[in-house]
Image 1 (tube, rainbow, N blue to C red):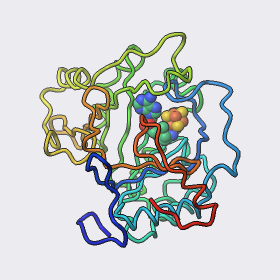
Image 2: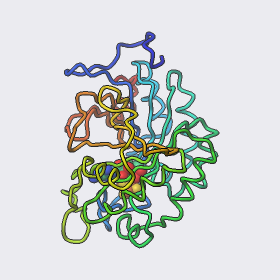
Image 3: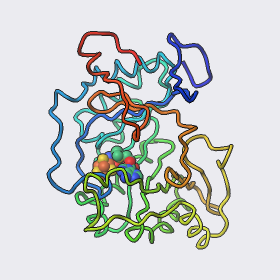
Image 4: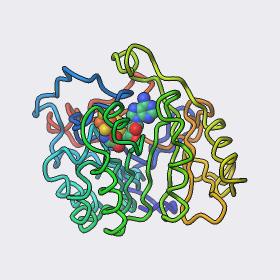
Length: 309
Ligand code: SAM
Ligand code: SF4
């Protein structure tokens, strides 16, 4: 199956709102080597026992079943996907699943410099690197572990390895890093990367994820875009409105080599256009992070049944 609508062995997955699912995000681990303030508490995170996490073979079985219903895009994520051993092996397994045309990964980039080439050789096509600040002290405050230099080395290694496109994801946090949006935008002047500004979603506040004692100020992407345009001049619209291909509006700075993406899940939710399913590290298939419902694929797999979606 490809994106172009040829037939699949099973009926496509279509939900009650008529949304057809063609994209699967696969969380391969809950483990992470960072503790970003908006995602995890600083201390005391208990990782799941290994046998609760899907094996690589089990993940492949779910992806094969999804591909049979017309899923053709897969994104490997986490936790931190590069924190799972031999992730290039899983990458190769998923790249070989018939029908999976587009295999991507989202990573915090800390270990990317050492894995980029092997991942590319294994069949990974695209990579998104998450980075919220270019300032080392601020990185220590936001990510609470690791070194921004390693992320920048990972980003450079991804470009050298030939990933296309390479995207840089920045979560904009009011009063924390919003004064860096111009510096992030400027990275696209010379480099053919896409810098994406992501509105902070208060999903994890209930888990006690906050910087210091308070929460973060919300910054809408309208504010971020205005701020960038004030500094660099009018942005050129590339994929906006009806022309959008995914959740991001895409613009370009005047004469820039790269692009700017704006993902506005809070100020302009894109639920009606959502085409993604999620496989959690523990084997649950979910259509939405904000909706409690899911299917326990692990139970089906370990009960010996054929996986179905
Ligand atoms: N560890 C990898 C990484 O950081 O890229 C992959 C998993 S992480 C959960 C995936 C993306 O979600 C990252 O770009 C991260 O910045 C973003 N993210 C996590 N929590 C968020 C939140 N509360 N609001 C907005 N984006 C968030
Ligand atoms: Fe780890 Fe990614 Fe969460 Fe940061 S956003 S703590 S890197 S999983």
